[in-house]
Length: 151
Image 1: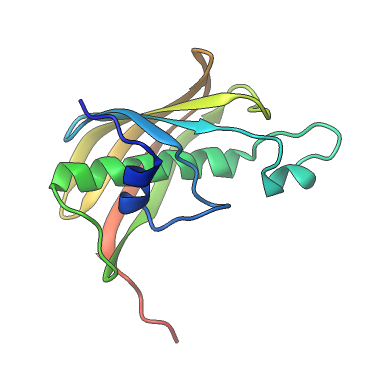
Image 2: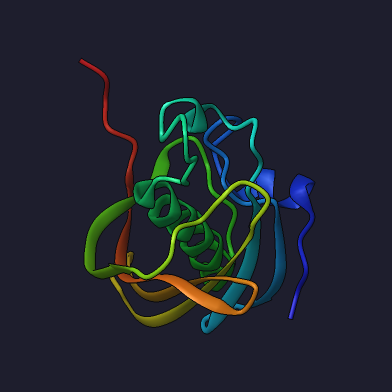
């Protein structure tokens, strides 16, 4: 079990503000499970328009946070660091369910479990909780692929 601070997280993810959605990894068991947190703050840019009178974290960003946690678990499982030649992409989202809204001030706990891995593709069962209550769940497929050449 390994805890990771934000500096370590930045070594595993190419994302930066405002799209970096992992603040800390609480535990990581390579090949098995990772638990991370995202502190949801009122000054995040998406809250200005989603929604002005009742700010809610967009569901797609909760799924993205799950994918970022899955990427860290994937690289830790492969016992390697990411490089500029490849990226851990979303390959699919199944059974996504949104149970409760996530609001500014919440601490989103992301629980990601690796259930299968083959030829650079990982399947992850993911759950997001706030205060112990389930807010989102989904099964994600992520694939390690070369960075596509730009046209």
